[in-house]
Amino acid sequence: MPTAITPGRKFMGRLTKGDDLLAALNAVCRAQSITLGEVQAIGAVSRARFGYYDQRERKYEFLELNESLEILSLVGNISLKDGEPMVHAHVTLADEQGRAFGGHLAEGTQVFACEFALQEYMSFRTFHRNLDDATGLFLWPAE
Ligand code: ZN
Image 1: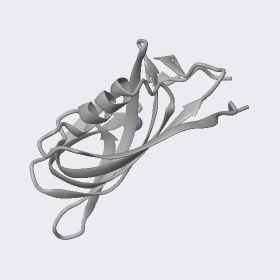
Image 2: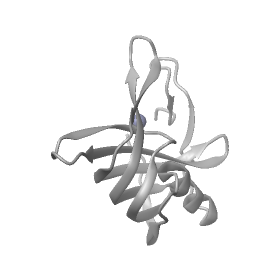
Image 3: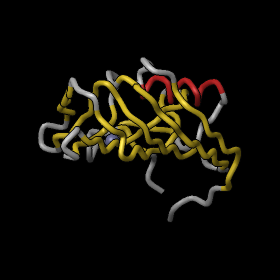
Image 4: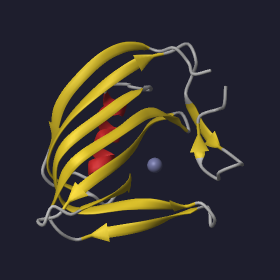
């Protein structure tokens, strides 16, 4: 069974040109002590780095695009890993032809402009990521 959560604070803001997209979102969560929540964003990046999880090899393969791209959609969640807030986000990006790419957002993605919304949640259960043997990923505990 999933865990019931209740809404906490909601934040909207923008990131600064040149920020690392993932690091900047993590910094907002740390600054506001958001330990559980959702994040969404749109905007543009001047370069991108995102991962694809190779399920057989159990490791991320990272793709890097050194070009201007639109953030069509960034969607993710916030929970705890090693006691710190951690943003887990996936992005869909588009190039000048409108072709879309995407994956697991990684550090190395540079903001051109970005508007985000963060929804904090409260829960009696702690959402803490731990290594999951079945997948090799850091996941929330199974209920
Ligand atoms: Zn992911």
